[in-house]
Length: 225
Image: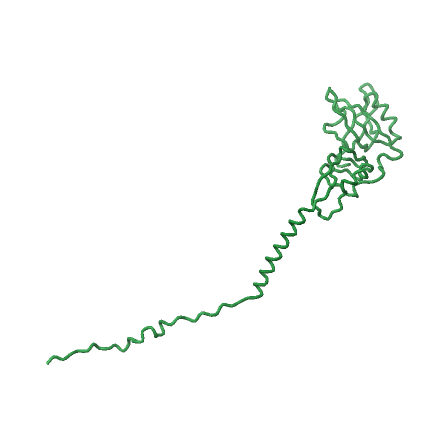
C-alpha cells in the first residue's frame, strides 16, 4: 500500500505574506505649513512690483535744467555760449530751471565751473570780486615762449616782467594771480595770441608798459582756480 507524503511545512515561513512587518511602510510625517514665510514672500513680491511701478512713473518726470558747456572761471560772467538747456529726471535736487536763465546770465561764477556741470543757485553770485572796484582788464599780446601751451579762459597766471638781453634788470612778478578772462586764437608764428587778464588796477600801468615792449611772460598756476 502506497502512502501519500505531504510536504513538510516550514514554521519559519510566514504565510501571512504581505501582512508581515517587512512589508509595512514607514509612516510619513505630515507636511509642515509655514504661513509666516508665505506671507513674507507675498509682501516681497508686492513690494518689488510697487517699486518697479514707481520707478517707471518717476522716469517720466522730467524737468528743464541748465548745463554749463564751457569752463567758467571764478568771478567770470556767464554767457549765452556757456549754458544750454537739458532735460533731466526730477531727483529732488534744486537745479535752476532753463526759464530762469536770464538770472544766470546776469550773475558771475562763485567758483570755477567745469563743462557738463548742472547749475544750482550756489554757483552764481550777483557781484564779481574779480571785476569789482580796484580791478582792471589788461590785454596781452604774447609771442612764442611767453606762455605755456593750452592756456584757457579761467586759468590763474603769474604775470612776469622779462627784461631784454641788454638790460641789467632781473625778472620779477608783476601780478601774482591774474585771472584769464579770454584767450584769442594763436598767432601765425605759433604764439599764444591775445589774452585778456584781470589784475589789480595799481599794477595795470606797469603791466601795460612792459606788455607794449614785449617784455611780459605768463606762467600758469595749476590748482589756483
